[in-house]
Amino acid sequence: MSQKPKPSHGLAACPGCAEPLESGDRFCGACGYDLSAVPSAEAGADRPTVVIGTPVNWPDAPPREPGSLSTMTQHPNDLPGTDSGGRDLPTAEVRSDGPTPPEPASAAPSGGSAAPSGDFELAAPDPRAAVRVDTGPAAEAVPAPAPVPTPEAVPAVTICVACRAGRVDTDGYCENCGHAQPRERDHMERELAGVAAVSDRGLRHHRNEDAFAVSSTTLPDGSPATLAIVCDGVSSATRPDEASAAAAEAAGASLLAALPRGTHPQQAMHEAIVAAAEAVNSLAEETGQDGAEQDPHRHRNAPACTIVGSVVASGLLVVGWVGDSRVYWVPDDRSAPPARLTEDDSWAAQMVAAGLMNEAEAYADERAHAITGWLGADSYELDPHTAAFKPDRSGVVVVCTDGLWNYAEAAEDMARVVPADAADRPLGAAQVLVGHALDGGGHDNITVALVPFTAAPQGAGSV
Image 1 (spheres, rainbow, N blue to C red):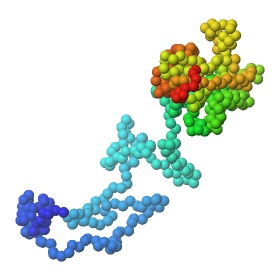
Image 2: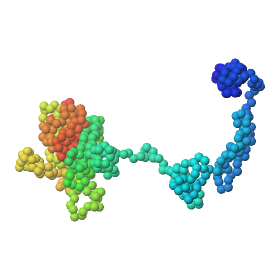
Image 3: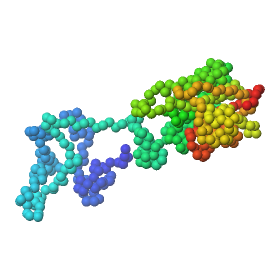
Image 4: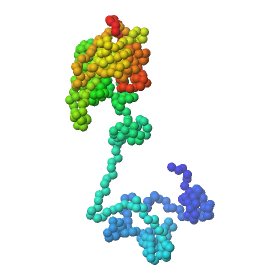
């Protein structure tokens, strides 16, 4: 609210020139208007021009033109009124008949245009902004705009890992550079308390045919038990990636069910391998995705894989295997000797066992990695191997496929590439081992699981 006093003449502006006035002015400072000649306003309450709530008698609306949705055009001189000085509004005619229509082309001078009409020409309407109204009976309904999808309904866009620009289509290839995108199984890692595993496709294979299962549970006495299963699909068989995945899952589930019941770890390992074999055998009974297109005259081997596993529980180290995947023991004290805890089911191992070749000669032969035992419907006979050990010192158990041990075959070679802190950082150590195989050429899928082993205080026995 303003605190400035009102002028005694009751005027805020000069009646002659509308110049603002100050309090106490007797004459206008701009035009000299005598303010004392202005009659003072009558005292009394302020009266509004129209009392609120009093009905106003507005003029009737003009009539509606026939066939039109709007009323007749209303002009300024249709209603009587006065200007701000109290004078009547002018009644000059106002044009409302629109612009003069253009003359026919024949009436226009040759090479010229029609003579101007004196009116302001209106620009032609933009057809893009025109609203079409169909008045016929067969007017077609305008479809409602499509709803804007919510953020949850918008599918995620996958960007190519190679060019970092193109979108990845539904079959896994970049629309820009054509690069095949890595599948989820191409590289897998998992770490739990007391165990870690890493699996990688390698540099030569088009898919990862290895699989693993790592987990931990408790024995009936409450002590912990840690398990690791590693499977390697047989590439020459049908659906080797499915075989290894089925075997790893079945073996892991069997161990998790048997150990808490008090089953001896070595017996539990034997049962787990049998369960894995049954899971792989069941794949041979399925048609498979390409069964309808299979040539009936073409021989196709049943799905097959190898398996190797370890269980660490109550100071006991149990291993089990079928095939040529291996388990190594690497003590924390590297001055103590490491050891390989499994024997391959392979042509080379048979030659060495029969005394026909030494180990160097056998593994240098091109037939060295031909396996003689595997899981699958067409295996000769299921013969699970199990063994139990009681190491007298702490160390780490290395469970791996031949994709790793091909680059560190002897136990001493494996001990050299296993990081010194593998027992404290099993996942980091597993990553280092996979990197070692990749640096060596990565000719096969690579999978390794590391299980730290803490020796029991009594330490009865040695590897």
